[in-house]
Length: 271
Image (cartoon, rainbow, N blue to C red; front, top):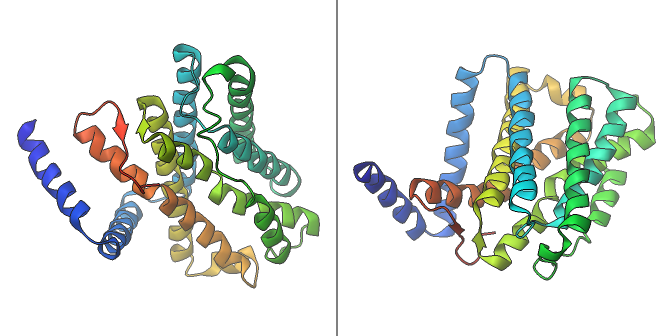
């Protein structure tokens, strides 16, 4: 085991010594390599979206275990959970009126569990909630709404429904920011919270990979199907933003796991 950890530790230390531009370049190269690998391994790229939903469900299951067995919500952001509930509720509405499918049922189950988590944090486990650490201002909800008014799908659906659809896409991209702020404030992330956030990171990477590979496979025709104007590009940008927001945390999570550390300690300025 030590022999395996030495090269991993050496690579980790080398990456940490690199300037930010080099780290960004390495992240982009790693992401592209992972996309190429997924393109050859996964033949039906729709399965990536299902896999993303499954990983997200695993993350929520870990969260439920933490709340029921550990009897504490320390380290969790109530604001992130509430923003998640908002975009899921809006997406569920859009799914019902625009394109009802299996993902509608998955969103319904995810929304129900998210509302339960919010209830536990607000009422049952309120004494362990770190309200002073959960101090990220959620004023960006307004810009998401304004952006949805300006840039939304150009499909044949009702205008209000198209605006709602765009709003949930933009809000989902930034909904994890309050959770990252909580971890930034505490610097130490206990295992269950770390597992949950890592699952979010993996789920969003798989979702991003699904969209990127679908665009490549259709040779850009998927973008035309989504509509004209800036909307198709904004969908891809939102997916990529979600992935990169969590990329740094996922790196330190993997490093901590390979290092045999049960508690994740984050350096300053990681998230």
